[in-house]
Length: 630
Image (tube, rainbow, N blue to C red; front, side, top):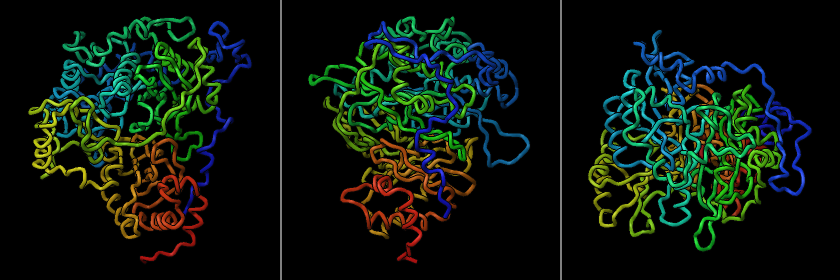
């Protein structure tokens, strides 16, 4: 068995990482910390020749060219340059990698932007129709609480995108080097904390939206949308455009006529924000560039927000200077300052993130290299105020919010588990049709969950039997019949459409979970619940590096094995096995489970056990283990 030699190297901070602009010795904060005494911490990097991709952004004239020209051709695909710009419009060019031939069957995946995961029933009806007419007939809920639609032909993109925009939704910024879909806990409780979390997830989504008219120019022929983005209207009282453009004179706002925050180069890489309430870590809050936690007083009044920074999942195999990272606690920000502070964080990454080496461009590397104290000081230099100490909170718990719950206002909500987010009709399993029946008959708003499932909210208690009957009629299992391993698991789409996938994920994980269940049952671990995730490549879309047990594709028929993530998703796992052949699952896991069974402490979760004992001890145990089932 080959164990990764660089376990520690991937997980421990290193001051030798050379991918952040050099720090001038003048970086200081003078005096007593008043806003007037704060001086700029980092000088902006000196101008130098920029990369081809950065120049492409500049030459695109705020995300228009060369996409506009190529959409007008008869070709079924677009060039690499046009594809890079298309991402900002919410779409990826793909081809079926299992179909061999000289001519690729180009098609397009379209991803929606749904802040807080909210899915109005009229939007679901539209997506159901569009996927049937212009897609491959199904929908896929992502791990960032939005739907993707696959199989769209280039000639139909305009019809699909314009239809989505005109109903009050959007694909703008679902991809690209901008703020992505803002996540939040999916639980629709009617309490002050949860209401504030919903509100501010939409505030941040609207605050960091791209301002370029490229989207209306390309997809609506320059016409205004029939219905403005719903979340923007819901938070209009925050005067977000005014706040966005407010210039405190400290370098946040750029002298750009279109994009006051992003400029013509946008951000160095994608940017992710999550919002939740104390104790509720249903969204993997530590995996975001910025994590925001609502803080209220005993009367339920909003006081401000705890803010964490520097999380992110993506890495590259065999490159030690790329790694997954859990966010650091930065501090507390009063409610009246939160938007300006968020702008300051984004500006810090915009100006000091690595634009030369794209693999090191995420903000996690800037936070990692500076350290949280220096990064906080950098943010304060843009913000103009000191960031207060982190407020104590209740301990984190992980809940997926599946099943029936009292919403808190006399209504119910129901979390419907969906394996790997795939909404489809297949044989007797007719989930897609069931969702349409519910949307048509009950007009219920939905929320996509961070675990690729769906929550129906605002349910009248008298309708509960009718909803359960619809599920049964369409072959959907009740929650008590779903294996906990499946309920906790996630996988990315991977093959055949993802161009980055090195092996299977979504199509393989059902059989893997069955095999893992068989091993656990055989060893007397039937009652244990283990959070398992799988991806087809190291980019981490299904957030594998936070899981208790993860499989990360590293070749056509092999996976890295990662162990030791927290069951409440507060730390990263460690790389344990460099290459596990796909058929070696049982002989790999059996000794690890045996050690866990023999040496665990009372009520100790599998991930906590692996974290406590470490890779070396597990490897040593495996070397002497003899199977009782050989």
